[in-house]
Length: 125
Image (tube, rainbow, N blue to C red; front, side, top):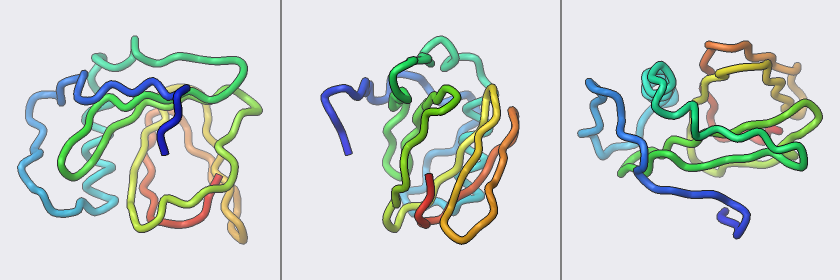
């Protein structure tokens, strides 16, 4: 869901060498975790991240045929609110700080820096 406040630049950061993007089939959450972990291991994206006191911030860094890569930042007290990603799957890596993920009826999940996590379509915040 794009907004006028969203800073989106498509395909502005090249994928690190050795990335296999040849498959046009849907990626599994585990494959996405490998892709995002490999991408996060480079330092090409870090200067793109922004910290905003008024709200979370996000920018799409890669737009491909079967996945996108976003850099997203939150400060303490900021959240996405509960939302659903529909039928999509995803994965993310926490670069700095600690992320708490809250899902209805489930215990809070805490993800520490350097750790990746997979998600399947489920309501979460």
